[in-house]
Image (cartoon, rainbow, N blue to C red):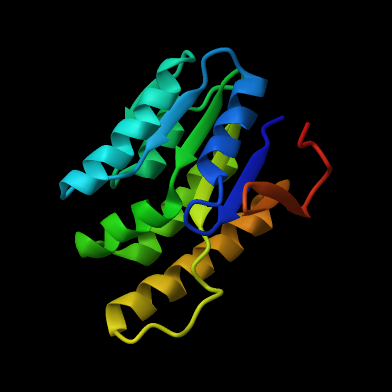
Length: 176
């Protein structure tokens, strides 16, 4: 039986590293679906750090900057675990590409629910701060908050990372 785990947290909270550890505990060669796109040297460096960290283990890396539902549908197997890093960047890509976000989110949720294998999802929690001062940021925050609620509803486990410490929001204590 597949299991969906959602890991939320702020910037540099340890959510990606924690998600990687969870995935490695479940499978000898997990699938890492990354959604980041680079538009500058600073982001190039962030992506390089993530890739270098995974070189020590045996990961199958897959890029899905827009078509995340198809990647999950295609790659999900009962005996495999998928780590998606991260939903907030995927949503950013959808907004920047002027996609039908409601349709894409529905397709993503359908792919998750049909997935026969475990899926670990990493995403940035942005709803704890001030109300953004511009429309695009508010739209992003609102869509991301809604996406988190929908994913949390179908997840067996939801974890909030705070200063590198996992806090279980929903589910059993499986953090060992």
